[in-house]
Structures are given as structure tokens and as C-alpha cells.
Length: 609
Image: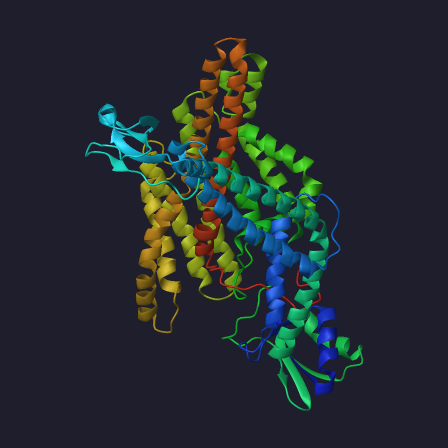
């Protein structure tokens, strides 16, 4: 349920400005809106410090603390972390450059520039040339030596003379002595490696201060919020005023809460105007709270005047995820992980995330059982009583692959139609006694008829509804949609506008219904991937006991990859079916912004209000 909001204005004496803001922060109930948004910004120094702490915490948060805890202020530690990170990036870039130079100097081997200089000082005229292999013996000099093979029949030669110049074929090309030698490059790289290792140890020491950084960040954020609140108000020599939004159920007590703190204020609360967009606070049903983890990941919030769809998401998404992954064995893995990591995941990501993982695992396990698929193994692959038990539980499974596929297609379309119909019924419920409710009911009827059309395309010999009845159902639904989508006192105008606005959505209803076939297609692909790798592992293992380990590795890697692909499919398809097809049919655009009250701590439990 979306909590009703009231627009609130609070005025106090200018001298009580700080006391008023302190009390509002303690209450944590008013979502402030700035009178002049351009002026309502935190101090530049505070913003810079917050940014530095955020980046430093991200770096040291991935490092295991080691060594002694440094005696540093958190902000100083953050600055040092960022400086180490900056210098490390430069040093790693330098290492890459040294490696490239080292590879380019491969023909020179480990000879040093000092050694070449000693030869010159001894009177030896040493030169280097790029020459063809066949020209080597035609060079007239005191000493010629092949240094390295180059490419395409050419070599690098060293030519030594004392008093005269060597006679060289025209095809030879001189090679300049490089500015650096490989030993010096190697020594510099080793020095940089030592520095990087020392920096790593220092970062491990600074990681001890992660908790202090977090605490300081909370304090700085509180300062920033206070500054924004102060600059966002209206102030003159005598009065200070702020405006914002507050849950209607708390608006009546705001004045008393301020008076209890000894503040003399004037408080005015009113319902939002038609053109105003209050922030959205959703009060989730207790059983649907786990789905809040998904909304946090997606960063989506329904508009204040839209609907809370969390109960529908909580039911549909786990079912869709189970159908997309389509394997009871994978569901068992998620269930075990969910139980074993529940406390740890709750502490790091919150209870909704831990609960959602567990629910996903249980629903996947249930779907895999009734569809008779465990790690790509179906009842016909298992002999004896186990196979018979799997077949008995898996009442959607058939020994004929085509029959099994057709059953899942039918289930996908039925689920899809129910899903879309519920979207319109929810929209009808939100409209209440509005005559447009009849249009939403019409859409529900039209979608049921559309299921008959889709069914005819896939199963023309096994219709669930005769086509003449299908046409009549769609006609009744279309008539309601056209007549009541855009009501007007002029019936002709209402019908004309309704027809014009409904043509494209009616065409889209076909594609929306067809979209749900992805539940079958992706789940079936997951099964065949698992089956293919199972067969590959069996073939490898047939080579004897020595091949069992490679076969086990194949199974482990293959099923891990399949699970990862399944998780991607959940976001690519399962989330899409809810956020796009379902939401658009329900009329929810997710155009809202979250309720974020001015408080000492900016986090708000969705179930608090």
C-alpha cells in the first residue's frame, strides 16, 4: 500500500532555526523540499570528504585487515588510501610499459649498456645490423656474430672492427643501440614490485580503519543533510520556514511533537494538489517484504498516484524464475545456500534479500519436482523405484519430449494470461467506482479471448475454446474498452477516442501474451544444456576410473555455468515480464521517487510506517 502524504509547512523564530532542525532530525518524519533547490547544497568541503570516504571504503572493504591498526583520523586514512590507489595505478601503468620495452629488447638478450661501453673504451668498434641470412658470409670485417633471428629470413648481426670500417652488402640496415638495456628494465620493475607490495601491506593496515571511516561518513552525511535542510528553508531576520512532505497519519501530531521540545512553531498540513508529486512510501504486506530486495537492486519506485504491485511481484517472480531455470537440482542448491547463509546474508544485504533467495530456491525446487527435472536428469533416465517416484511427483513430465514441451507452453500462456488479467483487475480496483473500471474489466475479457487466439496458433487440433466463442469474448472485451476508456458526455466522442486509443494496445496484447513463451523456451534451453554436458561427462567417464575426475570437473563447471545463465535469464526475462508487460497493463510507470525523511540516519525501514 502506498502511504498517503500531506504537504507540510513549519515556521519558527529565526533564533530557533537550529533547534527546529535538530528536532525534525530526531523525529525523522518530514521529507524536506527546498524553497530554492539551487541553494540547497552541502558545503563543498563536506561533499569532497564524503566522496573520498566512499571511494576509500570501497577499496579497503575488499581487503582483509592485517598488521597493526594505524593511529590516523578516518579522513586522513581515506586520503592515504586514495593516494596509494592513485600511485599504484601509475606504477602498474609503468610496469606495463617496462614489460613492453623488455619484450622489444629480446634480441639484445641480457647485455648491458655498460658492457658495450667497455668495448668501445677498449677500441673495439662494435656495430649492429639487420641483414639477410644469406648476406652474412659476404660481410668483410674482423668479427661478425649472429645475435638473434628476426623475421622473414633476416637476422641481427654484431660487427666488430678496430681500425677499419666493415664492408657491408647494400641490403643491411643499421640498428641503433637502445637507450635502455633489459637488466636495467628488470631492476626497475623489481623495485616497483617491491613498492606495490609495500603499498598492499599498508592498505591492509588501513583496512583496520574501515569501521571508523563508516562512522565518520555517517557524521559527515548528517552534517551535509543539516546544511542542505538549513539552506533549503526560507529565512529572514525574524522567521525561519521549511516545507516538505509527511505521512498523513503523522501530520496531526507534528505540532505537538515540536511543542514537546519547547519550540513555538506554526504548522500547516494539507493534501497534495493535483499537479504535485509527493514522494512515495510503500507499506509492504509482511509476507511480500522480501520483494523489496528486488526493488532496491533495480532502484525503482512507483509514483505516488500509482499502485503498489509488490504482492503480485512476490507471487509471480519466484514462479517465473523457477520456470526459467527449470531444474529442481538447482533449486535444491539455492535452498541449501539460502538456509546456510541466511544470517550472514541478512547482516550484509538485509533480511528481504536473504528471504527472497530462500523463496526462490524453494519454488525452483518445487517446479523442478513437478516437471521431473533434476540437473538435467528426468525420470526416464533413472531406473527402478526412484524413477517411478520421480515420474509420479513430476505430473507435468511426459516421456515424449514434444508432449512435455507442449504442456509447458500451455502452462506458460495460462500463467501469462492470468498475470496480465490480474494487472487490469488491480487497475480496476484502484479506479473504484470510476466508469473507466469497465474498460479495465473489458481488457481482462479481451486478454482471455487473446489466449484463445494464441492457443489456436499453437494447438489448432486441441482448442480450449471454440474460435466462435473466442471471437465473441474478444468482441465483448473490445466493446467495453472502446466505450469506457475515455468517457465523455458525448457518446460519439467517447467511442471515437476510445477506438483511436485502443487499436495499438489491442495489437500489443497479442505480443504481450506471446512474451510468456520465453518461460518455456529458456527453461527448455537450460534443460538441454544440462543434458548435453551430462552426456559429455558420461562419455569422458567411460574411459575408466582415471577419467572420472575430468568428468566431475566437466559436470561442476557446466552446471555452474548453466546456473549463472539461469540467473541472468531471471533478470532479463522474469523481471521484464513484471516490470514491463505486467506493469504497463496495470498502468504503473515507476515514475516515483522514494520518501527520504530528514533524519539523523537517512535509511528508512519500508515496514516502519
